[in-house]
Amino acid sequence: MTIRNILIHPDPRLKKVTDPVASVDDNIRRLADDMLETMYDAPGIGLAAPQVAQMLRMIVMDCAKEDDATPEPMVLINPQVVWSSDARSVYDEGCLSIPDQYAEVERPTEVEVEWLNLDGKTQREKFDGLWATCVQHEIDHLDGKLFIDYLKPLKRQMITRKMQKLKREMARG
Image 1: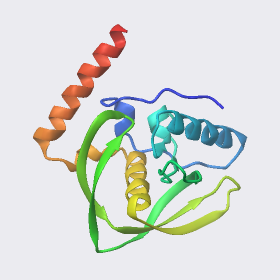
Image 2: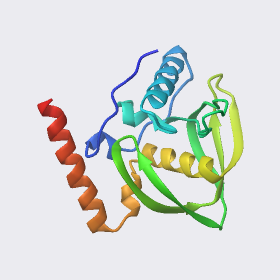
Image 3: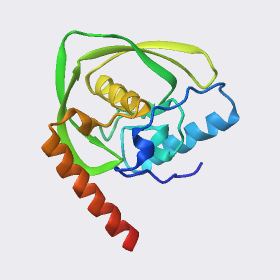
Image 4: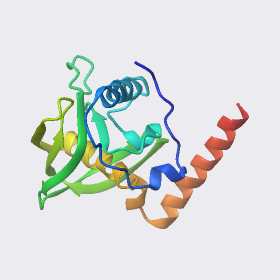
């Protein structure tokens, strides 16, 4: 397993719609392992393939956050929301591609998602709470959408400027 570099906003790859995974093979399984390793190392609760420069419809997540919680890693290939509740909830979201920036985003409280697992088998599950927020956030990445796209323009521009400054500082070393 390899820890991969996480793209930092603004990066044009983070705004692109990703391609479906054609078949679940060893390359996809290796990518899933790398993505989980990268997510845990960051540390984060979710990561989408475009965040590690792979333009594929694949996400990983693990929202078991408590210190004594058993990890619950999930790999979702070609995920899609097939149902969402009318009820809405607000969560203070962050993103590994937008480090140290958080903002409240409103999303459906519950969603039902269908995806392929690492065996290529179709899965379907209903998510709520943090899991629902996370899966929606990560699926947004696959469609070229970031959590800051839900914010008012001024706040979005302020965060983008901070990220541009961060990238310049990182480039200088």
